[in-house]
Length: 173
Ligand SMILES: Cc1cc2nc3c(=O)[nH]c(=O)nc-3n(C[C@H](O)[C@H](O)[C@H](O)COP(=O)(O)O)c2cc1C
Image (cartoon, rainbow, N blue to C red; front, side, top):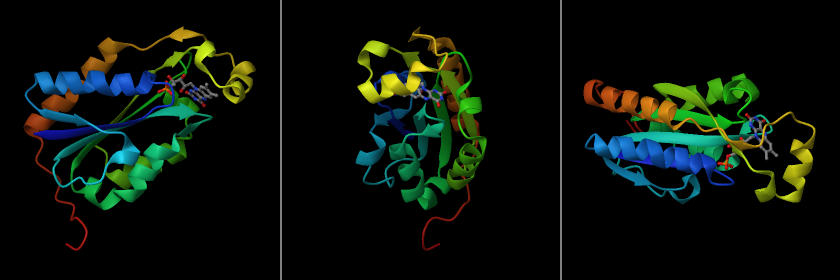
């Protein structure tokens, strides 16, 4: 099956989670393409989408939110999974606005969502980001759990093998 992995990431940590998911799906025999959300021009050539975002100040990044809005009809007609990645000390879902996340999942008809711990390297942050994070009890370091990421990817692969395509109508249907 042709799968698009599209991830909004500021410093690369979340993008690498997307790449790891893509690797597992490729190994399971799927054709995987990775494109940044703002660079996607069509979904005609994919049957499934994995959409991810880093969480910043309790929100998904605008590129991922815009993607969900721009392609909502096409996404609802495809198999879609979403994931978030945020501070290692707390699950991203609890840091993210639960209402926003729920609305987003509904918008795209997501079959599942997972939150993953992320990476925080103060040295790579912009001045404003450093100032923002200064008061937070965020623990520096790479807290990504690639075993958990691979497990999520295997769940997706299993569901791709068994679940029928959604019957949601695309635009004009
Ligand atoms: C300024 C700033 C604000 C952040 N806000 C949140 C937040 O509200 N919730 C959360 O779970 N993680 C938050 N994080 C942690 C990031 O989501 C985490 O570092 C993530 O792995 C970054 O991914 P990226 O490298 O793909 O941008 C914040 C990080 C920074 C630097």
